[in-house]
Image 1 (spheres, helix red, strand yellow):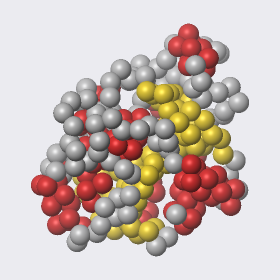
Image 2 (tube, rainbow, N blue to C red; image 1 turned 90 degrees about the horizontal axis):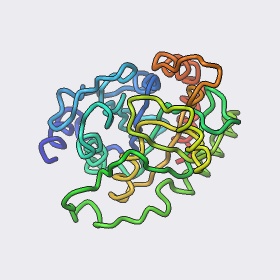
Image 3 (cartoon, rainbow, N blue to C red; image 1 turned 45 degrees about the horizontal axis):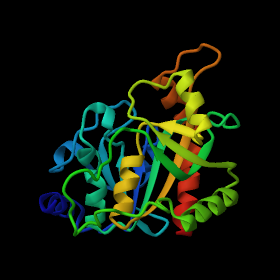
Length: 266
C-alpha cells in the first residue's frame, strides 16, 4: 500500500482527491473529458490489469465542478479469477489517498419489470450472492473493525442528492436493490424469477465487493446502475456483452450529466 500510494502521489503531484468514482462498462468517457493525470493500472504497484471490453484500465485524476476526483476507468471482476482482496484493493488505495465519498457505477440487467434499457437506477441496498466476501481473512484494524455494520451501506443523504440532481438535470431516475452474482454467465430465466421474488431490482457482477470494503473503511457510498438489458430474455433473443456496451453508450450522455450534477451538489 505504501508503495502504491507513493507511486501515485509522485505521478499526480500529490493530487489528494476527495471523491472517487468507479466507472463501469461503457461509462469511461467522463474520465477522458476531464483528465488531468492518468496512470495505466499495469504501471501501478499492486494493481491488476483490466481485461474486459469496455474497461480501459486507467486511474484518472481530474477537477470537476471544483471537486478533486479520482476515477477508475474500468474495474477488475471476481469472474476474471481474481481474489476478492485483489479486486477491492483500489478502494483501499483511494481511501489512503484521501477519498471520503465513493460513487460506484455499473452496467446491470433489469429484474424489475418496470425498468427499461438505458434507465439509470440509484442503488438503495444490495444482496451479495457472489459466494464470497472481500473481508474474509485476518482483519486490518487500521482500516476498519472486524464486524462492520451494513445497515446503511448506500448513504441516504447521497441518495437524496442523487435524486435531486436527477430532477435538476431532467433525468427520470429509478431506485432499487442491486443483486450481485459472481458471473461470468448470465442468469437463467429461473434464476431471474428467484431474484425478483427475493427483492432484487437489477442484477450484475460487480460493485458489491467494492461497496462492502468502502463501507468497512468508513467511506460514504453512492451506487448507480445503468440498466443495459433485460436480465433474461423472454423473447428468446440471446444476451451479449456487446448489447451491454451499446446500451451504455446510448445512456452515457444522461449518465455524465447526472454525475456532473451530483458532483456540483456534493
